[in-house]
Image (cartoon, rainbow, N blue to C red; front, side, top):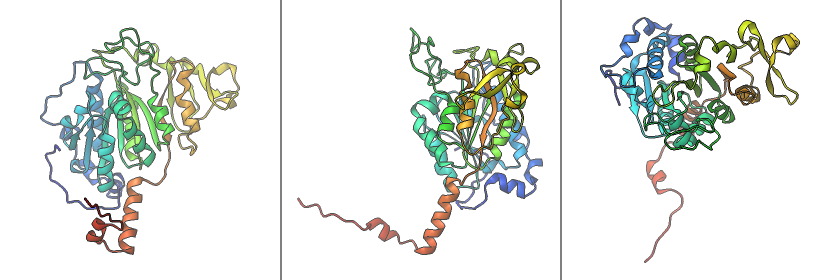
Length: 363
């Protein structure tokens, strides 16, 4: 664990940190600055890595939540992105490969007063950590997951990852990858995640807005962040980054706004004949047919269809919040269950250890 602040006692207060900060009027907001979240550690990523931009955005954004440093925890797994805790002057843990969601689940369940964040990568989260990720999402634990996706294994020097495209030539796939890649947003929605968003590392404004909504969400929030690895997979997202092409292929998601995009709004999203979604030319459809984005729809099928637009053309990419709905969180339900159990029957440690079933083993 890394921190410069004091350790709190292990209580189980009912309020989550975001709600508590808002209720207190955000008094701590004026006390914390971006520089207060920087450590004395040398930031050691490759020059030009997108992780620098994300780190700076997070350090600049977190003070606006009005949460003290000692009430924040960053948990990471293994990978380039997982060096994050070293560079954040909060509590943190650099854990083991793929297990950050599991460790963060235990922490969030035991300490619901903390703001718990998971920082992971496409390899860490979607390969060895795949099961941990989906179970955290389905349980709706109150934590925020930042999934850096550069479509490559960067720390181990350029092998293909679970999000690498078919045909990707890497050190481990010299004749091209045969694997069909995961779509992290689709995967999260398939696990019924209550908050799912996507942002670009270089889009400071868009990234900050998605992070803000994710942090204010009660439950598991997953944000996929497209992050450029300029050493082993440079230019993976150039179409979405280049000012000359970004507007043509990026579909901005704003709740309550029509899904119209492209130069002069030339493209839009409409329903197809099977109930899914497709991209059309705006001047070729009735304005009433254009889909209005609804991030709060309870049924995740709409958000899932939105995440699959790239199957029509891999260049079409929706950016923003796909889904943001409310349902009971695992940690709150667990606390209530424990309270009920204590009220009904006082704890008897000896009886618990002895159990109701015994066996006698004879030689």
